[in-house]
Image (cartoon, rainbow, N blue to C red; front, side):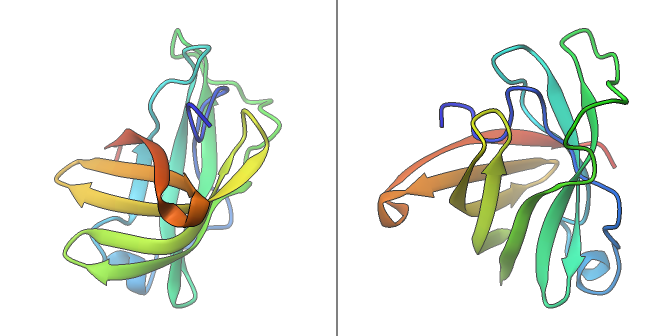
Length: 136
């Protein structure tokens, strides 16, 4: 769980409509994950999924920044069921860590163009996370 969402890199995408709540919510858009153990990272698109937010892997990149068009998890949801708490806080969702193929409870906090994304265990008492940077 050391690097929750990404050894291979993170990203969101296909099939994710950035409409409705996502357009109104400042977290909507594409985010670059922190590099994983291999130096790779993902682009994750965050938008509405009904009344909640979700994020989908849109693209994967190696440590040199070269896009991997064959990344096996393109289009897969990495975040789902995230509640909008207001004032840049999000909770109650789940996050999937592709590097370890595990799912964790998740929460997020938006601060300008940085999104702190956390995966938690033990009832939310133990959390680890990353800072993602806005792409658009």
